Length: 277
Image (cartoon, rainbow, N blue to C red; front, side, top):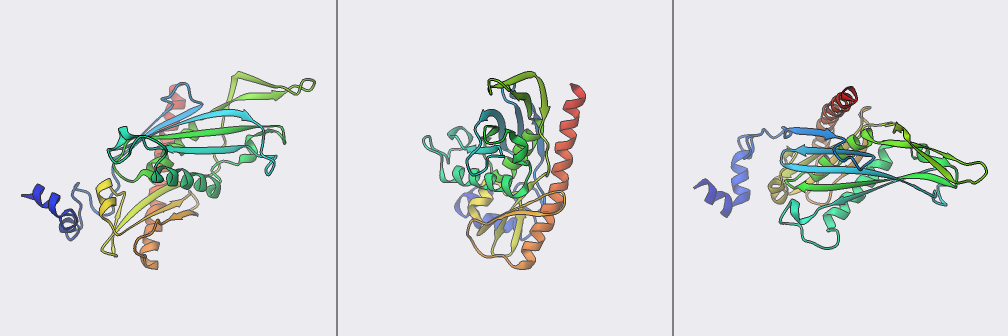
């Protein structure tokens, strides 16, 4: 009976739970799903991380390459994120060029990298106007069940903290770069941005960390990114019904709590790997 109701009237099925301040998966409205993190699992990458938020699974691999700085920013390196949503992660995605959702996610992450200043790109410059590091951040979804952006940001942050770069010197006579792969050092992480995503039902009911089904049924979505200083790095709202100032403040408050929780998790996993080494 319940299965039939869910199939025939999925929104009403969800509303029957929301009225009781709970959700079909047993969570309360403000509960995040269990989040797990592993780092350094891709041996061929300069840094990597695997994140699970509920059933949503994201892997991020970072590859550093030497390049010429851009003319506009001769004293900076740069970071290039790319989100891939292959058909294997969900039947909603098709083979071919990147989907609109994948492109939007890549742009969102690029904006967060810039606005949060997680890394000072000046520190990626080796020789002004001549040589710099480019960090290619390939983020792939292995299993999609909603809340893509939160999982991508956690995976990126953890992978950056796991990244080490070889020592590079520029020959005075030849001006050629000399790479010492035996001597590596980690990146300096200046900020720890963390995203928290929300769905709105019936213009007033907020649920955090939505599943794919909740995302498909809600009237609006919102993602808030904050750092450890409770600074607002980004607010992303792709259309839908408007939110009151009071609801927005509630989202920001929940996002700052989520930031502290995830930063602790990333620190704990990073330290345990360092201790094991």
